[in-house]
Length: 450
Image 1 (tube, rainbow, N blue to C red):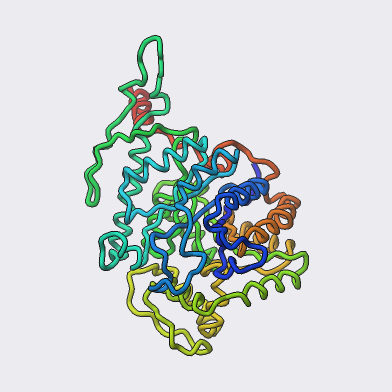
Image 2 (tube, rainbow, N blue to C red):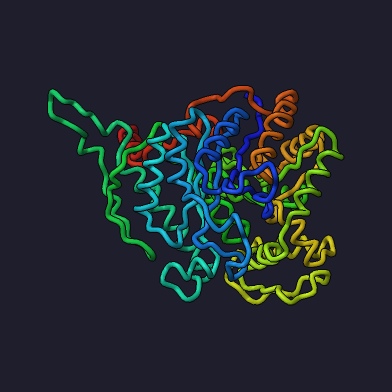
């Protein structure tokens, strides 16, 4: 089968751009409107997106205070939202974020296994380590855990969750009413995990789904993040401003996966792109300029503070001067470096920097016609920079409609994107293999060796 682009849709109801909620086309209450999320899910499914993706935070603040953020201060917990949306859709997947730092593996395994069953095998788990001081303050901590600790815990957390998802073999539930046998006790397995961070006996009390278990997604770009992604992730979201850096990341992750004995085609790299789509380049630029003009200054400063570790307070600085150096932090190291790179490469002032990153937090912003945007996506896809893209419409619903109605047909015309879903599960549509139950696989291998 000819390789084709995979697409995720990042659709926070309040919009991706920090001023999205102020746009005349956007509902001011979109972040907490279930009806609006239902509309977005159906539009994304009409566009044949692989998945509806939501990031999630465990605190409301950008940059150490509640002064900025506006529509970003409140929203739905993603697994709860997706459980409600799943019965209203048929093919689109749902990738929800959950933290390995502030959740226990059993809780994580149970809620994602439940979402996977409710959706008929369309769930994915976006693994995050949660890097903000404000989140730490909500979980009995005065300071967040160090970067290395968070990633060590994350590795073990994912390991335990996968063990729990294998508690039941696929054919464990007999449900024979006449014989009075509900399940085969020989096909239910304790986890009995004892590690540095967790002790979990198991088994999980949720069976496997039609896709085996949820797709594992990760987004780290630091050295620790790359190691975790190459070892555990099936889909990797990443942020790049240039084709060359995207290629370096792509080739590095694929090589690491091979070194770990994994098939590199089963590790999908999906950079984030924020498209302003117009019927002409001029129309697209007008859309960009209009949304940029709606940024509230305090929100822009708070956004930079949050993306540079949560401790850089820019109030009182000359907004038309350069970005000052950040204080030492244990926050999002890779994103901090990217924001600094953007500022330095473009010689941005503080104001110019927040205007640029307001759209996509360091992901690649593309302003142009459908043809121009398709050209960029095709270039990255065909030159070892991407297997697909996580699309971040700057404001909703219009920017999503623009992508579905203008860019998708252009990609289809070029043979780069599907014209119908390939399967019913998220794995089938992403082209990922069904994960064999570890216990069943071990038994089959033992029998084959006899």
